[in-house]
Image (tube, rainbow, N blue to C red):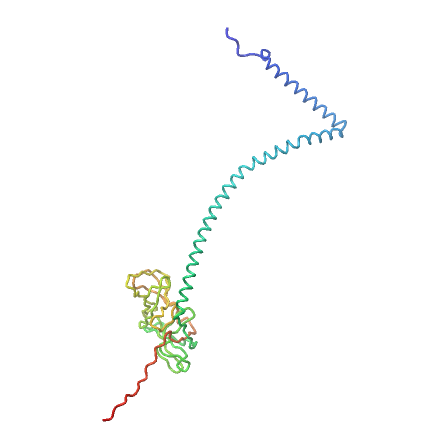
Amino acid sequence: MAPSNNRRPGFSRRAQYGVFWSYVFAVAGMLVGVILLALSYFDPTTFGAARTAVAEVTAPVSSGLSSVGRTVGAVPNGIGSYFMIHDQNIALRKQIADDHAVTMRARAINYENRRLKALLGLRERIGVPVVSARLVSSSPTSTRRYATLNAGSWQGVERGQPVLGPDGLIGQVVEAGPNTARVLLLIDPESSVPVRRTRDGLPALAVGRGDGLIDIRSVSNAAASFAPAEVFVTSGAGGVYPPNIPVAKILRHGRDIVLAEAVMRPNTLDFALVQRAFLPAPPRPVATPVAVAKP
């Protein structure tokens, strides 16, 4: 006959010892608790000393367990901080590399500018101002675009001198009286100024249209394309206008010939500056009389 699975502790000596010692520990704990309770009630001083002694004994254990708990609790934060700092380091290294590349390009451009300025200094000539005069009148609605200055030959104004505003070129003196001068504006159909693009030095001509705008015409052999907001300045070719004076700004996309607006509008100005020609024409040779031999 098979033995029953429902066996009581009495049939196992190990189980009996376990039950016995559990009772012993329970009774001992109860006795210790009763003794401590009675001691705290009848002799508080002795109870305080005992409590201090127990605290001294258990303090290292408590400190160790507390340190272990703090260490374990700090592990997730440490892992998160590690990954965050790692990502930040990668981003900062990339930014440093990008800034280094930009810095190197800026240094190269600065060196190139200094080199080109040194080369230009060999032949560059600064326009000499003649007089600052008031713009008396202009013709903004006529097909011919002129302006009048209240300064003339008595003040040093001569035919062919460029006229500038505070931000760019206005035109060229075409007639000079004693105290007045007539200025051909950039937007006049008879005006043609050699210019170049500031972005890449593309040569072109700024030709007036008579309607307040300017045509920029490429003079390069290759097909040229233009984009809005590109700026053209005087090139210095022809010897009339000093180089690098703002002339016009592109209005729309185009190829070879594109529409632009003048940087300066004379009808919004009160004063203008007259300069000497960038490279004045050489003086005419004086004819010497030819001796005729007498027969």
